[in-house]
Image (cartoon, rainbow, N blue to C red; front, top):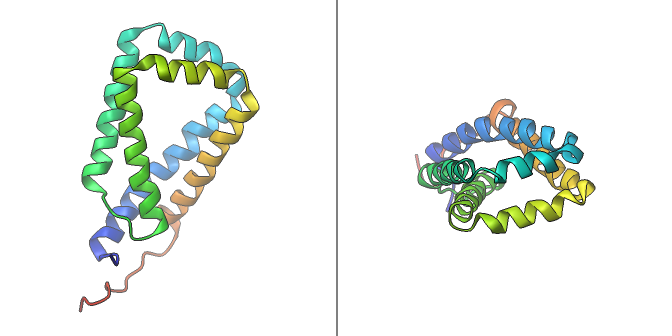
Amino acid sequence: MPATAESRARTRAFARVIGPWLLIVPGIIAVRAPDMGPLAADFFASPLTVWFAGALLLFGGLLIIAFHQYWSNAAAVVISLFGWFLALRGAVLLAAPQLIERGVAVSARVPLLVQVGFGVAVLIGLWLTYVGWIAKPDASPAKGVL
């Protein structure tokens, strides 16, 4: 389905928020990867903190899913998939936090892998920041719309 003016504007707005977030948060995690193991252990030591984080992730993911179901270009696809990722990760954190905890424990033993993974997220954040803040918005009407 071709992008409408509304879908392009919404994708740009979401890119303006998600892009810088993906630059900052995963960037800090990538830099601090060797020190993140103890922080993660402290996080999982508090069931209330884990539950609350899961609820917030689920909420954030559902917000993106509700307000950005667009698949018309690469940025729209990445944003929509990010919403689904957050929602699923939040649901797993609520229902089976031990799965996430095991994954974090395994990845903490390989900081280079963590740095590469979060480095990819930073690159996606850089691109989304460009899409949201720098790239000229496409002002052309959608095909078939006058």
